[in-house]
Length: 264
Ligand SMILES: Nc1ncnc2c1ncn2[C@@H]1O[C@H](COP(=O)(O)OP(=O)(O)O)[C@@H](O)[C@H]1O
Ligand SMILES: [Mg+2]
Image (cartoon, rainbow, N blue to C red):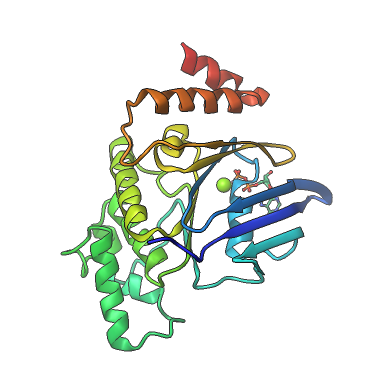
């Protein structure tokens, strides 16, 4: 299936915040196009504007210069066509898993029957069958994040925006959920924009990796990853790309330590 919807674009976007009365340029003339069905990763130091990019694509912040577009139309507010997943799962603690996913359908045009089956399908998609009635406190961090992914996808959005969704998980759970994300993407071909501070995660999952630099937030480079899927974490070409990305990040002074550490 070739995806036809789900393109995102920024044209010369500048985003300024005011901090204690002085201006802060979070994004400086950023232009970026995401293809329908593409898996795009964004990496960069803390504070370089990664979350700001996702917030603008999500339609959570309309105050910016330049154009932000979804399938060519200006993004003016949140839309069911753009799902969101954050680092913390943000579940309702008093609702079981199935009701947490159902809650995301409150603005859906689906009738009650179709809602129930959408919830069931998406709980299965993230591998949580049998946990429909479990409460958030009964879930591991990885399971809770699966619920958040099911919730992000249950409206069948064209685009899923993920802001460091696996950043709070232990390394093994993270690797496992990376495989799950890849499987879901291969099956659904939803456009994915993944913000991560993990270069390994970015090269493992993405079609292209956007490298950002901070103060002001700018795109330093965009690195294509053309390796076929499923990918092998130990693949030599993948490791070369990873080294290249780390060197690109190291172009920023505050990453020199990271680069030395990796080289040691
Ligand atoms: N609501 C806000 N008010 C003021 N400054 C903000 C706000 N949100 C983000 N910033 C600033 O904008 C810059 C980019 O932030 P952010 O996009 O969250 O970076 P990242 O996600 O890459 O860590 C940072 O310097 C941050 O402090
Ligand atoms: Mg962030």
